[in-house]
Structures are given as C-alpha cells and as structure tokens.
Length: 157
Image (cartoon, rainbow, N blue to C red; front, top):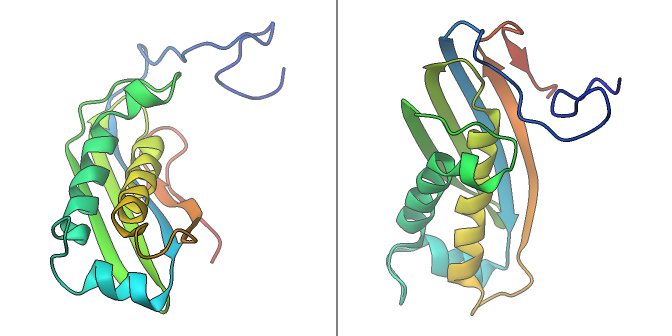
C-alpha cells in the first residue's frame, strides 16, 4: 500500500469514503505569489485599468474557484463551504495571494484554499499579460490546516 488515500489496494483511483466520519470545524490557509515587472505591478495594483479592478476580479475569481474545486479536482468531494476569503498583498515585484477556506464537514478544505490561490493568481496573469507575458506564478502551498482527526498542522517557515 502506498499510503495514498485516493488509491485502493490495487492502485486504482478512488474517492475516499467520508460517510462515517464526524463533521468537525475545518479550516485551511494557502498562499502563493505572482512575480512580475514593475510596469505590470503598477498596472494591476494602481486602480481600475482597461479590464476593471484587477485585484477585485482576482479576489472574486479565487472565491468562485474554491466553490468549484470538487468539479475541477477529480477525487475532491463537492463541499458546502462556510467561508472563503482572499487577501492580496503587494510585495516587491509581486502580488501575494492568501486564501482561507472553512466549513463544518467530514473532509478538509486544503484543496479549496489552494485552488482559490491558484485561480486568483492566474486571473492577475490574465489581466496583466498585455504588459508582461513573463510573469511567474510560484510557491503555491498550504500554510496551515485545522480540524478532522489529524488536527492542527502548520508549514515550516
């Protein structure tokens, strides 16, 4: 056995049965960033541009993506999220996205948080590509999760 929960004893892909698990409060926080030129950073962060407020669009796209994670990732359960938030912060030569997803349920929300970050950053790429096609989406990762039988987990700094 590989230890991978989404593979059965024969190695075939499967959706994990969470039916017997108790519903608990669960929360996940993920982050990632998009590096870009100074011109692209200025265009995306200094107010509405030709495509509208890029940061607002990215925030909305990330939230929408979190809600559709079960449709995008084959073995993810469709979840009724209680909340999703996206924080977008300007860094030197980049924008960092941090997503927090939560619910009370039988499975975690790590994939929803990471999907939200990914799509928020891809939205910024889409909106800024006319200025900088060399932007780089990077470092998407889970920062922390809580709830369920595995309890609390935090990434190493």
